[in-house]
Length: 263
Ligand SMILES: C[S@@+](CC[C@H](N)C(=O)[O-])C[C@H]1O[C@@H](n2cnc3c(N)ncnc32)[C@H](O)[C@@H]1O
Image (tube, rainbow, N blue to C red; front, top):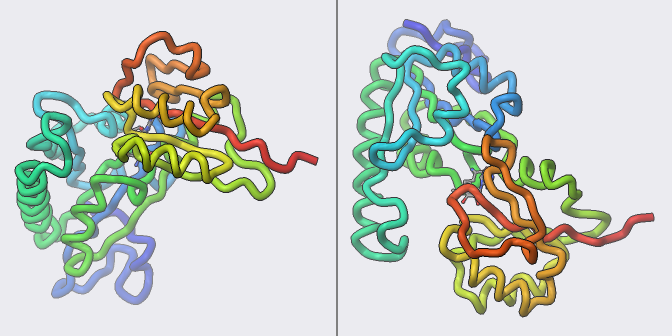
Protein backbone atom coordinates (compact mmCIF):
# COMPACT_ATOMS: atom_id res chain seq x y z
CA UNK A 1 0.00 0.00 0.00
CA UNK A 2 1.47 3.35 -1.00
CA UNK A 3 1.70 5.90 1.80
CA UNK A 4 3.34 9.28 2.22
CA UNK A 5 6.13 9.33 4.76
CA UNK A 6 4.60 11.16 7.71
CA UNK A 7 6.51 14.10 9.12
CA UNK A 8 4.75 14.41 12.45
CA UNK A 9 4.76 10.69 13.08
CA UNK A 10 8.43 10.19 12.35
CA UNK A 11 9.08 8.78 15.80
CA UNK A 12 9.19 5.12 16.75
CA UNK A 13 6.39 4.10 14.40
CA UNK A 14 6.94 6.64 11.61
CA UNK A 15 8.45 6.50 8.14
CA UNK A 16 6.26 3.76 6.74
CA UNK A 17 7.06 1.26 9.48
CA UNK A 18 3.91 1.60 11.49
CA UNK A 19 2.96 -1.61 13.31
CA UNK A 20 0.23 -3.59 11.54
CA UNK A 21 -2.24 -3.17 14.44
CA UNK A 22 -1.97 0.64 14.24
CA UNK A 23 -1.86 0.86 10.48
CA UNK A 24 -4.33 3.55 9.63
CA UNK A 25 -3.81 6.12 6.91
CA UNK A 26 -2.86 9.73 7.62
CA UNK A 27 -5.19 12.61 6.85
CA UNK A 28 -3.32 15.38 4.99
CA UNK A 29 -4.62 18.90 4.56
CA UNK A 30 -2.59 20.14 1.63
CA UNK A 31 -2.25 23.88 1.10
CA UNK A 32 -2.40 24.43 -2.67
CA UNK A 33 -1.37 28.10 -2.62
CA UNK A 34 -3.16 31.00 -4.29
CA UNK A 35 -3.48 29.58 -7.81
CA UNK A 36 -0.23 29.47 -9.75
CA UNK A 37 1.13 25.91 -9.27
CA UNK A 38 4.64 27.38 -9.02
CA UNK A 39 3.64 28.49 -5.51
CA UNK A 40 3.04 24.93 -4.30
CA UNK A 41 5.47 23.92 -1.55
CA UNK A 42 7.91 21.02 -1.94
CA UNK A 43 6.04 19.16 0.82
CA UNK A 44 2.69 19.68 -0.94
CA UNK A 45 4.08 18.23 -4.18
CA UNK A 46 5.52 15.26 -2.33
CA UNK A 47 2.17 14.45 -0.70
CA UNK A 48 0.21 14.97 -3.95
CA UNK A 49 2.50 12.66 -5.89
CA UNK A 50 2.12 9.81 -3.43
CA UNK A 51 -1.21 9.88 -1.59
CA UNK A 52 -3.52 7.11 -2.84
CA UNK A 53 -6.68 9.20 -2.26
CA UNK A 54 -6.84 12.83 -3.41
CA UNK A 55 -9.93 14.75 -2.29
CA UNK A 56 -11.18 18.11 -3.51
CA UNK A 57 -14.30 20.18 -2.85
CA UNK A 58 -16.33 21.50 -5.75
CA UNK A 59 -19.61 23.02 -6.83
CA UNK A 60 -21.97 20.44 -8.38
CA UNK A 61 -20.95 19.70 -11.97
CA UNK A 62 -17.85 21.88 -11.71
CA UNK A 63 -14.21 21.25 -11.03
CA UNK A 64 -12.82 22.67 -7.81
CA UNK A 65 -10.17 25.35 -8.05
CA UNK A 66 -7.80 23.50 -5.71
CA UNK A 67 -8.00 20.54 -8.11
CA UNK A 68 -7.18 22.75 -11.10
CA UNK A 69 -4.00 23.91 -9.36
CA UNK A 70 -2.93 20.25 -9.20
CA UNK A 71 -3.44 19.64 -12.95
CA UNK A 72 0.24 19.42 -13.76
CA UNK A 73 0.79 16.80 -11.05
CA UNK A 74 -2.30 14.62 -10.87
CA UNK A 75 -2.97 12.46 -13.89
CA UNK A 76 -4.51 9.41 -12.31
CA UNK A 77 -8.34 9.72 -12.03
CA UNK A 78 -8.50 6.50 -9.98
CA UNK A 79 -6.98 8.35 -7.02
CA UNK A 80 -9.53 11.17 -7.08
CA UNK A 81 -12.55 11.81 -4.90
CA UNK A 82 -14.66 14.92 -5.59
CA UNK A 83 -16.92 16.22 -2.81
CA UNK A 84 -19.72 18.41 -4.26
CA UNK A 85 -21.22 20.92 -1.83
CA UNK A 86 -25.03 20.66 -1.54
CA UNK A 87 -25.18 24.48 -1.64
CA UNK A 88 -22.65 27.21 -2.33
CA UNK A 89 -24.31 30.61 -2.82
CA UNK A 90 -27.94 29.50 -3.30
CA UNK A 91 -28.84 30.06 0.38
CA UNK A 92 -27.37 32.45 2.98
CA UNK A 93 -24.92 30.61 5.30
CA UNK A 94 -27.10 31.35 8.36
CA UNK A 95 -30.20 29.74 6.77
CA UNK A 96 -31.19 26.65 8.85
CA UNK A 97 -31.47 24.49 5.73
CA UNK A 98 -27.98 25.51 4.63
CA UNK A 99 -26.55 24.79 8.09
CA UNK A 100 -28.10 21.33 8.35
CA UNK A 101 -27.31 20.39 4.72
CA UNK A 102 -23.67 21.40 5.19
CA UNK A 103 -23.37 19.54 8.50
CA UNK A 104 -24.80 16.40 6.86
CA UNK A 105 -22.47 16.83 3.90
CA UNK A 106 -19.39 17.07 6.15
CA UNK A 107 -20.58 14.11 8.26
CA UNK A 108 -21.05 11.93 5.15
CA UNK A 109 -17.75 13.05 3.65
CA UNK A 110 -15.94 12.29 6.93
CA UNK A 111 -17.44 8.79 6.99
CA UNK A 112 -16.21 8.15 3.43
CA UNK A 113 -12.73 9.37 4.26
CA UNK A 114 -12.71 7.38 7.51
CA UNK A 115 -13.29 4.21 5.45
CA UNK A 116 -10.12 4.92 3.44
CA UNK A 117 -8.10 5.95 6.50
CA UNK A 118 -9.27 2.93 8.49
CA UNK A 119 -8.13 0.69 5.63
CA UNK A 120 -4.63 2.19 5.85
CA UNK A 121 -4.86 4.55 2.88
CA UNK A 122 -3.50 8.08 3.23
CA UNK A 123 -6.02 10.75 2.23
CA UNK A 124 -4.92 14.18 0.99
CA UNK A 125 -7.48 16.99 0.96
CA UNK A 126 -6.54 19.68 -1.52
CA UNK A 127 -7.17 23.12 -0.01
CA UNK A 128 -6.88 26.47 -1.74
CA UNK A 129 -4.31 28.73 -0.10
CA UNK A 130 -3.68 27.53 3.44
CA UNK A 131 -5.88 24.73 4.88
CA UNK A 132 -6.24 26.40 8.31
CA UNK A 133 -7.32 29.78 6.91
CA UNK A 134 -11.09 29.75 6.21
CA UNK A 135 -10.60 26.30 4.66
CA UNK A 136 -13.40 23.74 4.17
CA UNK A 137 -10.74 21.20 5.12
CA UNK A 138 -11.17 22.33 8.72
CA UNK A 139 -14.68 20.86 8.91
CA UNK A 140 -13.36 17.39 8.01
CA UNK A 141 -10.26 17.85 10.18
CA UNK A 142 -12.53 18.63 13.18
CA UNK A 143 -14.48 15.40 12.63
CA UNK A 144 -11.47 13.13 12.02
CA UNK A 145 -8.52 14.52 13.97
CA UNK A 146 -9.07 12.48 17.13
CA UNK A 147 -9.32 9.19 15.26
CA UNK A 148 -6.52 9.38 12.70
CA UNK A 149 -3.04 10.86 12.38
CA UNK A 150 -3.11 14.26 10.71
CA UNK A 151 -0.58 16.39 8.92
CA UNK A 152 -1.39 19.87 7.69
CA UNK A 153 0.84 21.19 4.91
CA UNK A 154 0.76 24.99 5.07
CA UNK A 155 0.20 26.92 1.87
CA UNK A 156 0.76 30.43 0.51
CA UNK A 157 -2.54 32.17 1.30
CA UNK A 158 -4.71 33.76 -1.37
CA UNK A 159 -4.21 37.19 0.22
CA UNK A 160 -0.43 36.76 0.13
CA UNK A 161 -0.63 35.91 -3.58
CA UNK A 162 -2.91 38.92 -4.16
CA UNK A 163 -0.79 41.57 -2.48
CA UNK A 164 2.27 40.14 -4.19
CA UNK A 165 0.62 40.46 -7.61
CA UNK A 166 -0.71 43.91 -6.71
CA UNK A 167 2.92 44.87 -6.01
CA UNK A 168 2.01 46.40 -2.67
CA UNK A 169 3.38 45.64 0.80
CA UNK A 170 0.43 45.21 3.17
CA UNK A 171 1.89 46.17 6.58
CA UNK A 172 4.75 48.42 7.73
CA UNK A 173 6.16 48.98 11.23
CA UNK A 174 3.36 48.73 13.81
CA UNK A 175 0.50 48.50 11.29
CA UNK A 176 -2.41 46.36 12.43
CA UNK A 177 -3.89 44.17 9.68
CA UNK A 178 -7.57 43.19 9.84
CA UNK A 179 -8.95 40.37 7.71
CA UNK A 180 -12.69 40.70 7.07
CA UNK A 181 -15.19 38.42 5.32
CA UNK A 182 -17.38 40.64 3.11
CA UNK A 183 -20.36 38.65 4.36
CA UNK A 184 -20.37 40.69 7.62
CA UNK A 185 -23.07 43.35 8.08
CA UNK A 186 -22.27 46.80 6.66
CA UNK A 187 -22.05 48.47 10.09
CA UNK A 188 -19.56 45.86 11.34
CA UNK A 189 -17.41 46.22 8.22
CA UNK A 190 -17.33 50.01 8.63
CA UNK A 191 -16.46 49.84 12.33
CA UNK A 192 -13.67 47.30 11.78
CA UNK A 193 -12.27 49.25 8.83
CA UNK A 194 -12.25 52.46 10.89
CA UNK A 195 -10.21 50.73 13.59
CA UNK A 196 -7.42 49.27 11.45
CA UNK A 197 -4.31 50.40 9.58
CA UNK A 198 -4.49 47.79 6.82
CA UNK A 199 -7.20 45.40 5.67
CA UNK A 200 -8.01 42.41 3.51
CA UNK A 201 -11.67 41.93 2.59
CA UNK A 202 -12.40 38.43 1.32
CA UNK A 203 -15.41 36.53 -0.06
CA UNK A 204 -16.60 39.52 -2.09
CA UNK A 205 -19.10 38.09 -4.62
CA UNK A 206 -22.40 39.98 -4.43
CA UNK A 207 -21.17 41.91 -1.36
CA UNK A 208 -18.90 44.29 -3.28
CA UNK A 209 -21.33 47.29 -3.20
CA UNK A 210 -21.57 46.97 0.61
CA UNK A 211 -17.76 46.73 0.91
CA UNK A 212 -17.30 49.77 -1.32
CA UNK A 213 -19.71 51.78 0.85
CA UNK A 214 -18.03 50.66 4.09
CA UNK A 215 -14.60 51.62 2.73
CA UNK A 216 -16.00 55.03 1.79
CA UNK A 217 -17.45 55.52 5.30
CA UNK A 218 -14.09 54.57 6.81
CA UNK A 219 -12.19 56.95 4.51
CA UNK A 220 -10.23 54.11 2.89
CA UNK A 221 -11.70 53.96 -0.60
CA UNK A 222 -8.83 55.81 -2.27
CA UNK A 223 -6.29 53.28 -0.95
CA UNK A 224 -8.31 50.14 -1.81
CA UNK A 225 -7.01 47.73 -4.45
CA UNK A 226 -9.26 45.15 -6.10
CA UNK A 227 -7.67 41.79 -7.04
CA UNK A 228 -9.51 39.10 -8.97
CA UNK A 229 -8.08 35.57 -9.43
CA UNK A 230 -4.65 36.59 -8.08
CA UNK A 231 -1.84 34.48 -9.62
CA UNK A 232 -4.38 32.48 -11.71
CA UNK A 233 -5.36 32.69 -15.36
CA UNK A 234 -7.63 35.71 -15.84
CA UNK A 235 -6.00 37.73 -13.04
CA UNK A 236 -7.12 41.38 -12.70
CA UNK A 237 -5.60 44.03 -10.43
CA UNK A 238 -6.87 47.60 -10.29
CA UNK A 239 -7.59 50.43 -7.84
CA UNK A 240 -11.14 49.82 -6.55
CA UNK A 241 -12.20 53.37 -7.50
CA UNK A 242 -11.36 52.56 -11.13
CA UNK A 243 -13.54 49.44 -11.19
CA UNK A 244 -16.60 50.51 -13.15
CA UNK A 245 -19.03 47.82 -11.94
CA UNK A 246 -19.86 45.87 -8.80
CA UNK A 247 -19.38 42.39 -10.30
CA UNK A 248 -16.95 40.24 -8.32
CA UNK A 249 -16.32 36.50 -8.70
CA UNK A 250 -15.73 34.17 -5.76
CA UNK A 251 -11.96 34.46 -6.17
CA UNK A 252 -11.58 38.15 -5.53
CA UNK A 253 -10.65 40.40 -2.63
CA UNK A 254 -10.00 44.02 -1.69
CA UNK A 255 -6.69 45.04 -0.15
CA UNK A 256 -6.11 48.20 1.87
CA UNK A 257 -2.33 48.54 2.23
CA UNK A 258 -1.05 50.00 5.49
CA UNK A 259 0.94 53.24 5.53
CA UNK A 260 2.88 52.72 8.74
CA UNK A 261 6.45 53.54 9.75
CA UNK A 262 8.79 53.73 6.78
CA UNK A 263 12.17 55.17 7.89
C1 LIG B 1 -13.06 30.22 1.79
S1 LIG B 1 -11.82 31.42 1.56
C2 LIG B 1 -10.42 30.35 1.41
C3 LIG B 1 -9.13 31.04 1.73
C4 LIG B 1 -7.90 30.16 1.48
N1 LIG B 1 -7.86 29.04 2.39
C5 LIG B 1 -6.60 30.95 1.61
O1 LIG B 1 -5.71 30.55 2.37
O2 LIG B 1 -6.49 31.96 0.92
C6 LIG B 1 -12.10 31.91 -0.11
C7 LIG B 1 -11.77 33.37 -0.37
O3 LIG B 1 -10.37 33.52 -0.46
C8 LIG B 1 -10.08 34.59 -1.34
N2 LIG B 1 -9.09 34.11 -2.32
C9 LIG B 1 -8.37 32.97 -2.20
N3 LIG B 1 -7.49 32.85 -3.21
C10 LIG B 1 -7.66 33.94 -3.99
C11 LIG B 1 -7.02 34.40 -5.18
N4 LIG B 1 -6.05 33.68 -5.75
N5 LIG B 1 -7.43 35.56 -5.72
C12 LIG B 1 -8.41 36.27 -5.14
N6 LIG B 1 -9.05 35.89 -4.01
C13 LIG B 1 -8.67 34.75 -3.44
C14 LIG B 1 -11.38 35.05 -1.98
O4 LIG B 1 -11.78 36.22 -1.30
C15 LIG B 1 -12.30 33.90 -1.68
O5 LIG B 1 -13.64 34.32 -1.60
